[in-house]
Length: 210
Image 1 (tube, rainbow, N blue to C red):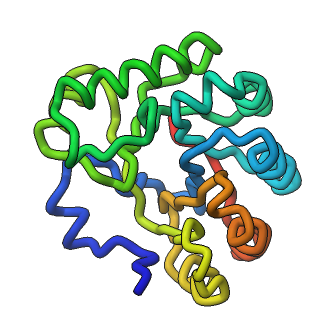
Image 2: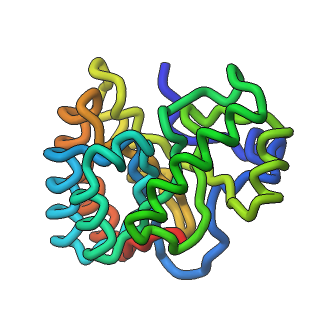
């Protein structure tokens, strides 16, 4: 079973995290996790350009170091590169000190390439403890979760069901998650063009988180 939207009750249980933006305009915040990838991320960037869309890429620090040219392209084209830990670690399985070291290492990698537009952080798998959240906020980070999830990481995903849910439930201020990763590639290539086209047809624009 897939949960394409986060219930409002769950969002209220964790008010220290950002689940959506409060906006009046028809704006969607499309985000990508787990990159950058030297083949998939440039394809995403080409597609975003077709829709005059800006997006936020929550990057794994180890990939940032491996593929700096892709980060430079993300920034050059007006998108935001943000923090997704150095090695995609689970907050529930890491002590505070080790978790903060993962976040700091990723931020250092991003900063070295000029990706210092703000301290946006998304916990891998959405897993983060209240203590970790408080510590990151004390360091100036905004902990960003999501309101809508494509579930494109699942190779057995019913992509048509995912698309129907995303098109139906996305609303002004929604934060929507895709993945620019090999595991998600086939599903992403099917979903993303149709999602962008469908939301644009409804009058929405796409902005990066800042």
